[in-house]
Image (cartoon, rainbow over all chains, first blue to last red; front, side, top):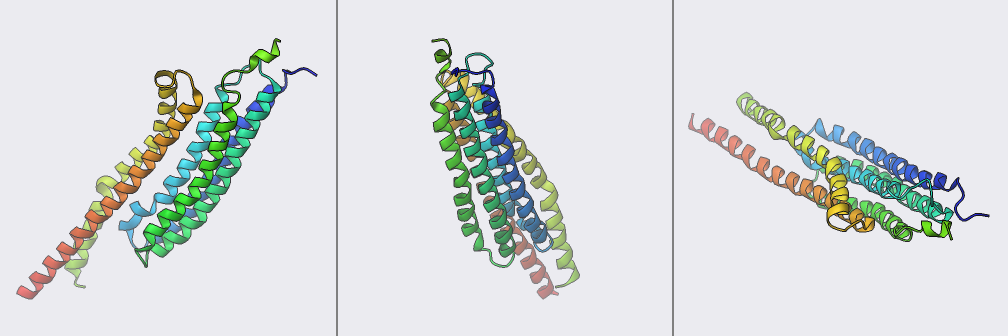
Length: 164
Length: 99
């Protein structure tokens, strides 16, 4: 049983792909659901559109979290000297960031849709909408922090154990 | 509401919509994509000497700064546009009273 088998980069690349794909699914759902509410608001009060686009921008931030983790992990992948330990860590980091981005995007979509529709009638809903959206986005940030902590274990280069 | 007031408010809405809103949205969309990546690679090479964790944290802080700038800009624009239509409708009401 070798420490650095040739199929180890499969898990690393699976981590890269899952971070990007899953967080983008969450961001797409958030953008779509909030966009439905904004289209409804735009027929009544078009001057409120800039303020009501905040859920869409926050969904974009969720996708940026997945992008940063993908770029971070893919910078450490090499064909030689890549232990299976590093492959598993990269897979775990990508899955952590991806699934939390999925949940954060789902929450942002539903909250954004409902709060933007309520903002047509009551303008004091805006502050509570921003607060709830910030709490929903912090869920994605937690996944990013865990991904960063996991990745820092192999960031210094652990390929030396392949050749010992 | 009289037709002149309706026309004035309609013109104000189209002006506000065509002036800066689309341009601002395009700028923010582009910066949301460009700012995190450039800050990641720039800070990786020039600030942190290859420590990728700190570079990722820098990219995330930069993306959140873009988000906060968007929120502040949208609140300021709403305050600006809420002051001018009340002035225009007040002028229209005064001109009606003078007749």
